Length: 199
Ligand SMILES: [Zn+2]
Image 1 (spheres, protein in one colour):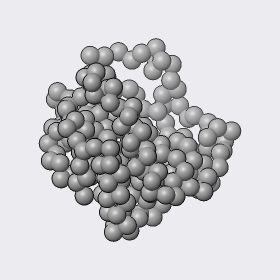
Image 2: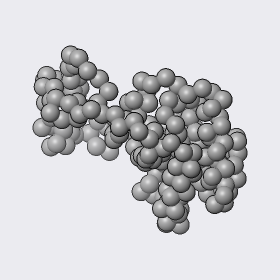
Image 3: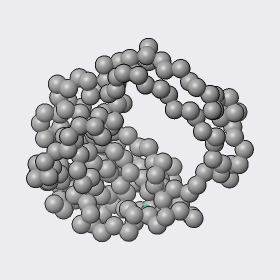
Image 4: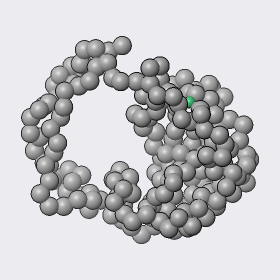
């Protein structure tokens, strides 16, 4: 268990005002904010880090505790979950049934991921009006592997790139009925390649 900050962390300007660099991403058209902005001060590191959900000493794993009815599609080894509401045209998470992170995922499951990525991307693109499906695994909240897929609406060039999920937080939410229909379509698209649609 790490208790000493790394050389990298020791080199950070903790507690010092970091200049706002408008030549970087904040100056690009994809950056969602304008006006006078200030970079937050970096706080002291926390070591050892607190346990994530699903780690020893952490909160109970919600993915393991969730029944299939919390998901939109499932098969023997994988489940696809949506979020209760969103403001971009698709936002789902792919999770293994087993309590694994990416590094300890059994080889068979790890080998399935490539084809599952294709299936989720195709199911989202089939909705129409989607230029790109962004995929990301972050995992700072929970140990249980959850791979995000976010649909970027076609034509909305300002929503390109890594700021998409910040925009997602800012834009008006999609109507609940429309959102439910979107998730049904994604689930049906997944089921065409196996498993069952659950919505
Ligand atoms: Zn779990």
